[in-house]
Length: 103
Image 1 (cartoon, helix red, strand yellow):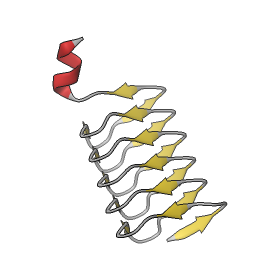
Image 2 (tube, helix red, strand yellow):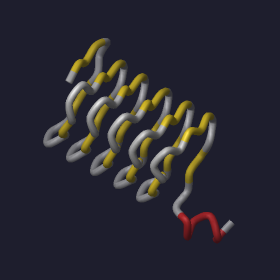
Image 3 (cartoon, rainbow, N blue to C red):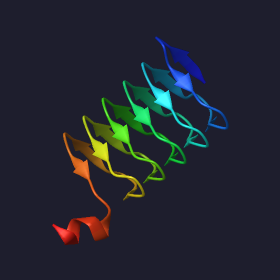
Image 4 (cartoon, rainbow, N blue to C red):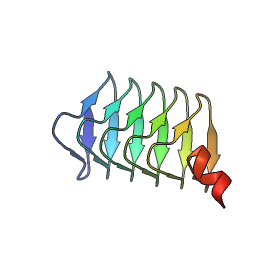
């Protein structure tokens, strides 16, 4: 793990190989896959992030899952939401499936 510029990893957070965090906070029991890059990201508790993800200026809600090879920029992910592998988005808000149907 390479951390620079005031990043914080809370208890029981785990990371794969070659993870880079800048200006980010990673919650308890969060799991970051290998070769992830986080810049100005808040990762809440119990979040799982797959391998080779690039996350910038985003918030990942508690218990969400981000698949492999995702690129999220200026995004918000609701708690418990699953983001499919290969997702590339900018400025999006992701809601749980049942939450989206209630609107």
